[in-house]
Image (cartoon, rainbow, N blue to C red):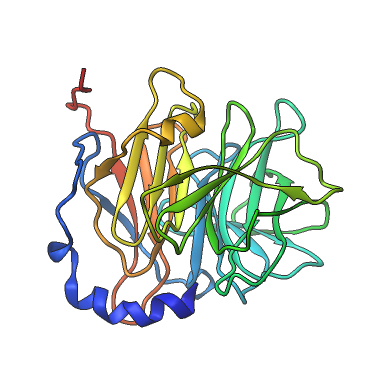
Length: 300
């Protein structure tokens, strides 16, 4: 992931947002991004995934990229670390995305950490680590997690993937490939075994590329995917299945391009979404919030 992008970074820095191609299908459903906090902490310098917490309202879970530790951080909207959970006995080969949603026990919420990256498309197996979402008891709390599950799976062919999503209505997991065009969407149907190796089924392709993050809204009716330049948005008022929703043409959300923006999550109350970039030596990185535009009128 990083080897690929570092080669392109100087080009993006020179081009800037104003020279990007015009949005093909823009929407005014979201307000311009609001900068909530600058990312300065060294513990968070390679953030690759964020997901809004359920058990800790107003906060979000985040993790660093490959070759970092196995910590999952609970952050507030000022990027202060409220809680650190370290998954013990494993390594961070290439953690790329994170999701929060339902799981095997009704009424409980779970965190899903996706070790799904593969820059050179050489690994046969990918993993999703799942643990019950904890509640912060006091700021600065540190927890060593020894009880978590591993969902081991493979794709029909080896690919780099950086997007993990959970459908809160079906509990199905979705993974999206990154580098090719089109990209491919894979599905792991619930219930999924934690003792056998699973095969993620290809359900569709999308005429997009470089997809690095995504999220399904808490009500299961809206979808976001992003690459380094664009945020794509699907609305689903009629309750289509997730794959059927993505077969519709997405709307383009006006997006302030970030130095290396790979993370996106819906707010738990559906009021908008957050994005966060890895730190950069040449540009400042911020936590952005894109609020819903209350004056927006849905098209008929």
